Image 1: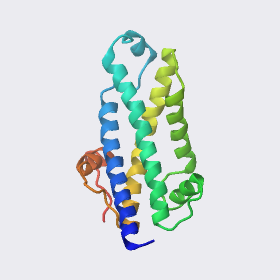
Image 2 (image 1 turned 120 degrees about the vertical axis):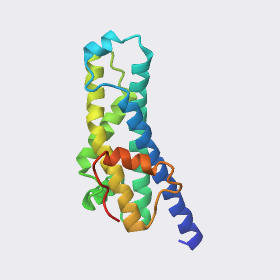
Image 3 (image 1 turned 60 degrees about the vertical axis):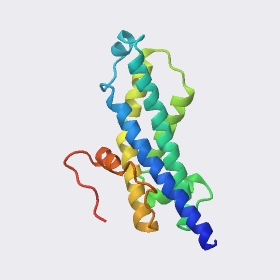
Length: 184
């Protein structure tokens, strides 16, 4: 790969890192608008209220967007690192090995929830509450994956988010009050 091509690939990854930070920020903003855990009774009582259902739709969309963006960035970074990436399962196994992902199974669970959100049209409030409570419970793990991936890109590839517009907000979401980010 020529130097200009390599720099273009690194710049593309830096843009994807920006997208991940932005996704975390907006997912957290939507997630915070709701009182968790959701109950079927709450959904039934508010069935004609637009605000909570717009927030739920945003959580679904932003959860999926974060996982999609993170997946695309991981695939791109593994190729820049010269690691095997013929299949996405090999990409996931690599990131599990370097402790970016807690486990391939946890990633696949998030993926299953993302796919259900996109294709399952639950009509019973009990099922809707169960789905969203499950998504909500998976969000912190997805944030952890995003944080560890950004640390990996910085340390292993020397790539940082291109603009960093959401860096402070990303850190606030991922690390929260009273927690310190990793050194380096």
